[in-house]
Image (cartoon, rainbow, N blue to C red; front, side, top):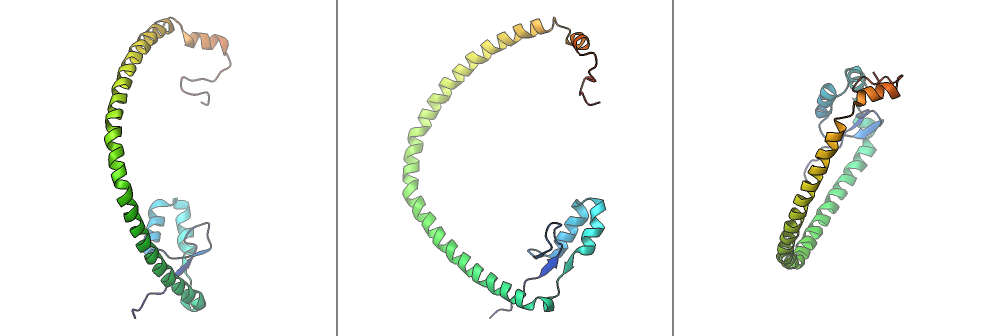
Length: 162
């Protein structure tokens, strides 16, 4: 029987949770706080971050350890069943997927050829229409029109919130 390190619990690992089980070495969390949290929060976070003494929660720690062992075994069993089921699924689906891809690939290439031609025609028509629009737009002095129609506007060329 291997000796397993009991789970550890801490107060205030995160600011919205009073206590929680450690999921990684607490040094990682401390380093993260020092590097990533706002300077105004660092001292408070580090001061409040405390390991809960094992003796004070021994029965909870023991029960958590038992849960972890049961959960780990159940997960390993699930993964073994799921992996076998996935392999069986793939064995059935792979040939159908290969047949589909053999039919789909030429159909996709035909679609792309038609679409590409249609897009080129659209781009030519759109480009001509846009050039005509821009030619007319250049004849308007929108800044002067804006000053006339919006005399109390705080627009500064970038925003209405200077």
